[in-house]
Length: 492
Image (tube, rainbow, N blue to C red):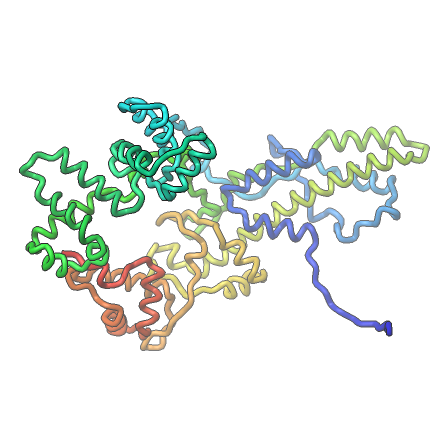
């Protein structure tokens, strides 16, 4: 049986303008220009201003939420409102740094890594067209590190389906052996062990007989004791190879000179341009801290004059008579585009204000760091702290902190690196976990590499300095710092 009832619910929905602002907040300065260009292309009513012009004050504009519905829309009222409002242009108020001006950086046009290999292949003695096709297929299977990580059977299947060539295992491995003789040494390897072996064999062949002994020992280690080497079981290696510590040390030094990524010296084939970090904020210390926003990628935006001229022309043509249906539709289209342009300009302005207010709060919260550059002066700070200072939502602070950078006198820093939890020292003082991590890094850097400290020992060192933390927490911080366990830090 159907029943009717009345219920009251409170829902919170984001307007399209709020959603647009949230998306813009997440965009770093490095990619903001691309987003603005997309909007300029999609909305002809939005235009880029070449000069300061007349500033359009969005705050004096009427509330967009009070916009009348289409059926209540009065054309004359709309025209009068927009003619008086005169939305000529909008000048961004943020400052830009002269040090970050756009510069034309010449880019060298180098061939790709695969082209380099193909050129070498063309100079090799290849017996047949079939062998040349197999070799080319193998070169095409080499990844950006210089490895062939695909299974040989899969490459054989590719040759069958794409080239209509039936290949035996013997033929493909014969071609692989030729590919592995190309420069740089180690290219075409199927795993790290094979890559290092190819390089050490190449060095042995080029080396005079009298200097080969450490390299030959290194080859023996890589061939027969690779697992023990990777796990740094040095005593087992000495025992199994019947060698002294000095001989083992010389062999390991030879291995450490090898390149685990032989293609690393070449630019990636799909990325010929260097990637640079573009800071979103700049902080200078000139008789006090000064914060500016980098507006390099935020051009001045304005309403297109042509659209305003169209409204003027329409108003003149409809004096003393009612506008027709098509004329109303045309004006409604213009209104939609102008409103969209105003919303986007407003969102850019709000983005800049939100970024500035958030970074200003962070700058004053971590004032001692920005004055001294000493990581130990960083105070415990979480998103909630900045949200309370700025009056913004925690999610908004999170969006600002994500993928944003600040340029200081002590280097360019990621914003989220300033946020950390707190721990209490033995004397009751609250310190940042960043401080503990820095001290942990210093302890590990100063340790005896022949007898590196275990996590338990590291815990004891930290407790001696007044930081009462558990061994498990030490292990967590060590992993976050990408520092291996004690056994893997051991050196001869």
